[in-house]
Every structure is written in C-alpha cells, then in structure tokens.
Image (cartoon, rainbow, N blue to C red; front, side, top):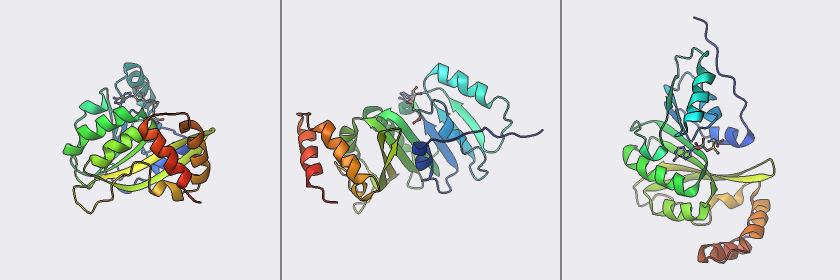
Length: 218
Ligand SMILES: C[S@@+](CC[C@H](N)C(=O)[O-])C[C@H]1O[C@@H](n2cnc3c(N)ncnc32)[C@H](O)[C@@H]1O
C-alpha cells in the first residue's frame, strides 16, 4: 500500500514549539484543534505514536477526515476525544504540547499529568491568558524550568515555557515574572507591550509585575 504523509505547514509559533522535540517516542498535542503540531511529526519514524487530544467532537470529526487517506502506520496516530485533565498517558518518553489554551486549563492539565510521568518527559506550554496565575502554580509544583521564550507573529506575542517533571531541591523553579524570558530576541519589545497592558490593572500580582518590568535593564 502506498503511503502518503499528512501535509502540514507550521506557523512560526508552532515551529518554535516543535523545535523543543529531542527524541521522545510519544508526541502529545493536547488541545490540538487542527492537529498541525502533532501531525507535523507524521514523517518522523523515531516517534512511536502521535496523540491528538481535544474534547470537541467537531475537531475530532475533522481530524478523522484529515488523516483518513494518509495510510500512516509509523508513527501510529491516536485521536482522543477527551479533556486534557482526564487523560491517561505513558510514564516515560513523552513530549507534551499544550498551546493556545488559558492558564487555568493548562495548570489543571499539568497537575493531573504530573503524577503519571517521570523526568524522561517534557512539557511545552504556550498559554494565551492568565499567565501570571499559572506561573504562581507552576512555581509550587515538582517541575523544573528548562527554557522560556517569546514568539512574535501576526502582531502578537506568545510566551513559551518548557518544563520537566523534577522533584529535586536543586531544580530551577518557574519564576513569577519569568527568568530566562528577558534575555531573548524580543524581550525588550515584549516588556514594553506588557507594560502598556498591565499598567491599568490594579491587582497585587499585576502591580508587582509592572514594577518588575520597569526595573528590567536591556
Ligand atoms: C485555540 S485552540 C489551540 C490549537 C493549537 N493547540 C494551537 O495552539 O494552535 C484550543 C483548543 O483547545 C481545546 N480545548 C479546550 N479545553 C480543553 C481541555 N480542557 N483539554 C484539551 N483541549 C481543550 C479546544 O477544543 C480547542 O480545539
């Protein structure tokens, strides 16, 4: 049987997220929607399985249609209609992408997955809102920060945070305002953008954030 791959052109944001792949055997695209990120691994034969996860039946129907004629057997493509909070997952060797969701959902999903996986897995997140609240939570979890970055695309900034399960006392914790974030290519413009947004917020977290952002020197 001839085998055709699923054609995928990734956005700049998704390409950057994908760039954190090393050699993990299980690719999880949680909140996958179009499935582009997960399906972009369909020509990677060192990936055992691509798991496309989304609770929306419309999304799942469209994904089924999309992969119907692709005849891909390696990697295996699993489509799961479920919330990320209810997912069961392999213990080892996962790369878990959670992008384009709010900080609250991402925090809940990470909390439910953490007890199931070990430090051979990596989690890459890109929350689109409530990032400060999510950072407060991440700081308290047994998880360590590997990298943070900023993507600028279509006039929008996106934060990426790369994490690994880690219970050791020496792990680098996720910080409230970002640590590695402020040495990246778009740092200064992103700081200016955030200042314009947060300066009107009166909550304690936001006020602290504005003071921190003002103190940054580039
Ligand atoms: C804006 S899309 C993001 C698509 C893709 N990840 C990206 O970044 O381009 C958000 C997707 O998350 C899904 N979603 C919402 N809540 C979810 C949850 N609790 N668990 C998993 N997926 C969820 C939605 O159905 C939707 O398809």
